[in-house]
Length: 522
Image (cartoon, rainbow, N blue to C red):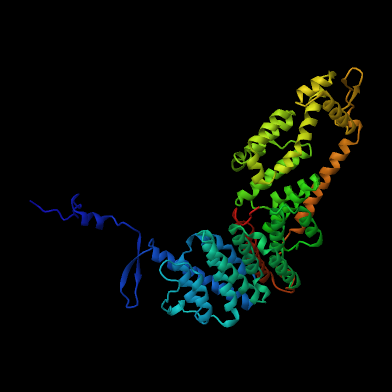
């Protein structure tokens, strides 16, 4: 009998053979300091924490590079990666990053370590990294790096719902931001101001920082810090709107100038607040224009909550203008469920059914109050009545006021008389009232093309398109230093243009990468 030299299959009962044949986790070969190979589990918590801490160290390098070269694109890259870094943060990662990046400032390092919430100990002494990870930053850039680390600590405590610790970290973060005077870190200071307000809003005391926000705004305007100015203006508007101080908010808008250099996200938020204020002040046309522009400026793939809130207010303002929102809007997947009450409201207004309007308003009252649209919805009662009168005028050539009161669910025929008279005066319908017989007699509708209505509609559409063209022209971005090189050959010009295009592509990523529903909290 000839023995087989083929490798034998492990037996079912041999657990060790099974384990050797099929590893439980993904491993990779690594080399230690002695040159020996060893296996490292890349899915282990220690490995993931080390990789995350390494990312924070690289971000600190980019901040230092921003301070040296005065190029803000490196800091923009750090801010874009904040959203991807948030789920990976924990106490071990933050402690490793602080111990590594703050080696040259022991006092600042201990201050940051005390802000990190840990079950075991508030301060853990880590061994000093060696080799290429050993980095000691100069005192000139240490304050900016500590501001970034305090921002990460604030975000971590905010996500962990540790609001007292997040409030303390936010105060430390703001003190670090106010201590620096370098304009290259304006993007970092704007992000810090945003999370400073976010922490106080989650704690329920957003109005407590109003005086501080005014002080920070004055300082930002004096130093031409456009990013922080835009953020602080939106914070103050949010404070006024939360307290229903619409008159103060409007006076604040009239006395301030929103910076044109602000990012699209801040512009979208500002336009939403402006639309809310104008809707309350009965300027529905301007409000609708601002809200539609806010929807265009907002990110299309993220910030779904912000876009839902803007769309809710847009529906109500359109109804107040006598317009019916398109049905396709309510069929968009991420709008379908949140806008269901507004769809029912639109049906009631379109049909002129006052009884159905009252039922919808009462059924979803709490939701409308939460959305901040209940006060505006209360004004829709007159629009419902107007829609009902128009429907009755189109259906009947002559009808009694008693029947009109019955169809519109009014209290008495006298209410119907005043309602019809006002509709005739406002030129909602073409009719006349027979006071002796208590009738409303419809008149023949004139040809709309013999009036100025088509001209006005065309003028409104042309003005809308010209405004979009103007905004697009202002938003055009050109490659930097495109005309600074004269007399260069074709090859050098192509290389320079390729480098400028790559830099421009990195800058354009700012609009879509670092936003979610929280960043655009309406």
